[in-house]
Amino acid sequence: MARPAGGKVQLIEYPLFDTPFAGVGSSAIGQLINLFGRSNQPQFSNMQQGGQIPSGGVFLISSVRCSAFFKTLANTNYSVAYGAITAETSYGSDASRMADCYDWMAYGSQVTVYINQNPQIVMPWWQFPAGGGTHGSNVVNNGTSLNNGVPSREAICRFLKPLEVAPLQPFTAAVQFYSILRRSTAGDFTGNAYPVATPTTATATTNDFSPLNQLNNADGAKVTLVTLGGHISRDIGG
Image (cartoon, rainbow, N blue to C red; front, side, top):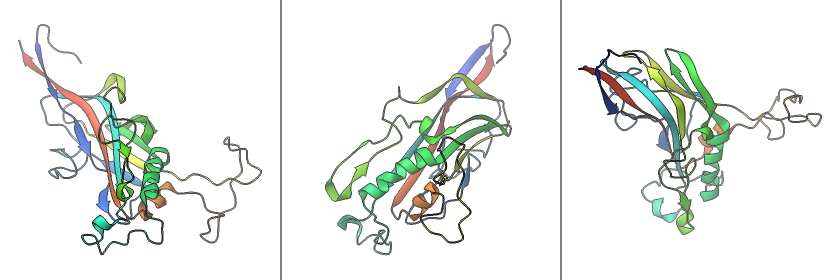
């Protein structure tokens, strides 16, 4: 970023987060989720102006972090407060089922960062570890506390060169889900395999596997976050 010779630069820490989805119960999450377009919704995002940074500075994105929290409600602690929620009795709602959701996010979705509608980086969810949050598990009331990666600031995806967002330049990010293709017995699973014929009925033996469907069917607490780490650089003169 060019600046006048001898000029001073003010650096302001400016991490931004947005919530792909958050709620309790079965859901209808779509295949594509656009982020950082909302404003003044602090329960979901700290964006002040949808899709843009306030004027007067350049936003330098130095990292992307993705975190998740999935919790079963299939225990006695939640039977009264959440009595109207079917705790996946027909779907196997237990700690192991909700723990699977971390894998469905990690290997069933991709994250893209756009600047001025141009993709800057496209990678699977697991490529952007959370670097924080709770981590581990216990056996009390089917409890589990996992995350995307381990809670260490050293274990996050930092860019060699920050992504630069000019003042008032639009930027966004997106999370997109993909199915895992079911291959025929003649396939070799290397990309040269032949997909089976399009199924005429929704049977487990013919359909592609959808991580998104697994997430939507999971009838527990579900919260995901995408955080852009970075700072605003402003010229403040000499």
